[in-house]
Length: 455
Ligand code: ADE
Image (cartoon, rainbow, N blue to C red; front, side, top):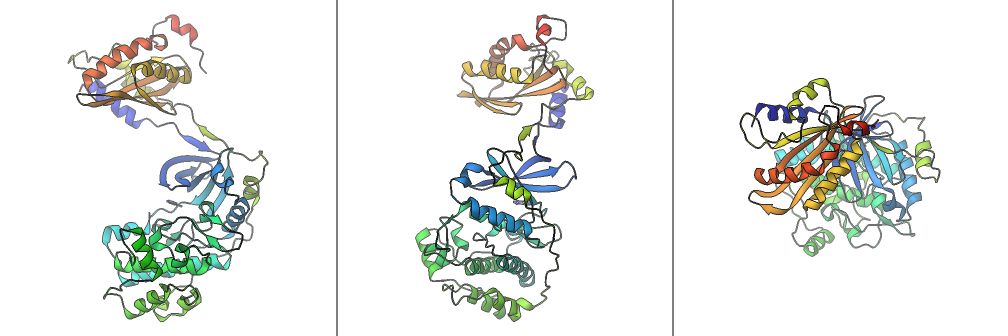
């Protein structure tokens, strides 16, 4: 590959991508994706603070006739400030989405540690379990139940402090009956209490305690207490609490786990009993935290009211501007006729051209040129992925195009083969470039210049 094309790809890799803004937050990478919500990393552009934003489609929760309960739980979560619970910073809404802004926890999931090192030693497991019980006890005392405690909801910061996420938010994906008992349709069955599985309605307190017992077992054993490939067999084991305690568990740990994994929620160990247990009390540090007196709930009221005044919009920032250096490094490619490298005669995998047309028009023209050739078009901001519908010698031809802003009325379009045969790419390119003739600007004054009115 020629040095010119290499420098093009290097510059392309270094150029920033279009970014999405929601209110004062700039969205970044996806941290997690569940059935109801996506979690994205974001930065507060005013303070530089890092946050995680949970994004929920509004129609998914409004259909569930649960708005009042969700509002109540989100309000309570705003009031909860505990070192072992992921802090809820604020709530925002657009016409179609609800954004729950959360403290960003920088150490990943606790269970990454298990995946990496196998089981934890008993002291480390106890330390995490103590923090988990502190978090659960605090939230229960304020009437908030988790109902979905599982490994994905246990995060760690860089100091090794446990942070439980999604407290009070599981209501969003659950159905609630009028009798005040909680009913759940789904959940990770391995961590779910027997009375939840039998769906007779249950008390959130003892169901959360059961999940804490399963978590403690996994931390110390490195595997699940109830695990069967067949769902019915798994349910049977959970309902009868059939599990085996590994020999390396101390007698104190065995006692706690046996009493928590009691299939009868009425006789199951309670949080006050756990807090008093000798095994639990070893090296126990009571959490220190202050209650923030001035929590403002205006954002929660605004999100759940019909008032449209406070709605935010998800804005995609315009194509990324390119600096002079990046522009010069690509200057060899400023023509649609440049697919062959002049020195080597080889077909290049990438090329670029300039246009004085507005970015949206360029995107439409590219789409119009690609579709009749049988390409499947996938657009995202100012980037487009084109996939051929036939399989060539080296697999399906795939091309990516991206529009960059060079100056307010000048765009550069980059075109790169990402898959398939180079000769097929050349054939495609010949057809494609003739469809784009109208929008290419060669640098000299030509008829297209008169149309260059983009702002
Ligand atoms: N993944 C889900 N929630 C998160 C959070 N609050 N911080 C970091 N990663 C997360």
